[in-house]
Image 1: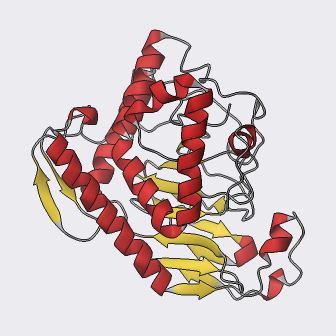
Image 2: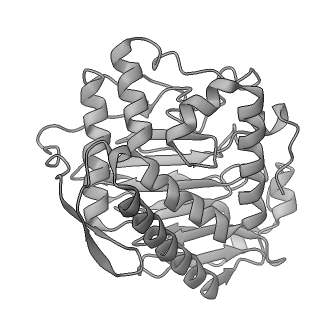
Amino acid sequence: MHRFLPRTAKTAAATSAPVHHAPFPSPEPAPKRALIEHTSGMNFNVHAIEEDSAGLDPLVLKRLRKGFKRGVRNLVSTAKQNEVVISKFNFERAWSNKKQRDNNNITEHTWTDGIPRMAVNADGVPLLIHLPGAIKEGSTSILLAQLIEFVDALGGKLPKCAGAEKERRGTHNDPTMASHILKSGRNFSAGLALISQLYLISYRVNTMLQYGDKPHFEACKKLRAEAEKRHKFLKVIGSDDPLVMEGREIMYNRQTPLHPDKSDHKRGWAVLVVVGPFTGGALHIPCLNLHMSYTNGKMIMIRGKVLPQEVEAFSNGQRICIAHFTPRSLWNSCGIVPP
C-alpha cells in the first residue's frame, strides 16, 4: 500500500536513473563528529552524530529538535510575510477536477532568489510554501550519504514502482509492509535502519506542517493514533519515527513528468525535500504559472493532488527527492476527513 519507505515501509522506490557511483562519486560517509547548522543561521557542534542516529544522546537530540523547530518555524513565518496571491486560481474548481477558466491569464512567477514564500488564492487558501535553505549543507551531506548507503545495503538494486504520477496498487486495502522490504532479512534491516536515520528530517517536516497548516497537522496526529490503534504493527514499525504524515517516497535521479499526486487526498499536503549536488531541476507548476528553485536543502509544502507539477531537466550530479504525504485511502479507512 502506498509509496516507498513510509513510517511503515509499505511500498517501492521510484527511479528513472541509477544511483551515481561514477563519474559522480558518493559523498564521504557521515562523520562521527559533525557540525549541524540550524536553519535559523546559528550553528553548534554536536558531539556524537552517529550513522545510527537513533543512538544520539537524549540531551543532544533535544537540542537538535529545538533548533530545527525554531529554524523551520522562522522560515515558515517569513514565507507567510512574503505571501503571493494568485487570484485567478480557483481552488474549488481544482478540487472538482475542473479546468481553470482563465489559466492563461495568470501572471508568471519565478522564485529563484532564495526568499521563502507562500502562495495563496484569492480567498487566502494556502496552495504551497517554498523554503530555500531549510536544510543546511552539513545536514544534507549526511542525509545524502545515508540514502546512498541504503541503496548499497540493498545490493545496489532499487525496486520499481508507479511513481507519484500514477495510481498505486492496493490503495484501498488495509496497510501492509512493502513486499520489497519483506523480501529478505537484509532488506528488512536496511529499511528499518533508514527509517530510524531519517527521524531528524521528520522533525523538520512536522514543523513545516505544524506552522504551515496547524489544523491539518493536528488531523495527521489524530490519524496516526487511530491507524496505530487499528493496525498494531504500525506502532511497532513507527516507534523510531516521529513523522505525523503516513508515508515517504524516495526518488533517486528521477525527472518526474507533469502529474497530480493521484493517491493523495484533495485536501492533503505533500512535503518535498531534495538533496544532492546537481544543476537545474526546477519545479514547474503550470496551473499557477510558477517556476521555483528545487535544489539541495530546499523544502516545499504543496497541495499535490490539485496542483499538477513537474521537475525540469537536471544534470551534473546526484539528485534525491523525498516526498512525505498521507494518502486518501488511510484517511478514508480511519473515517477521518482532513480540514
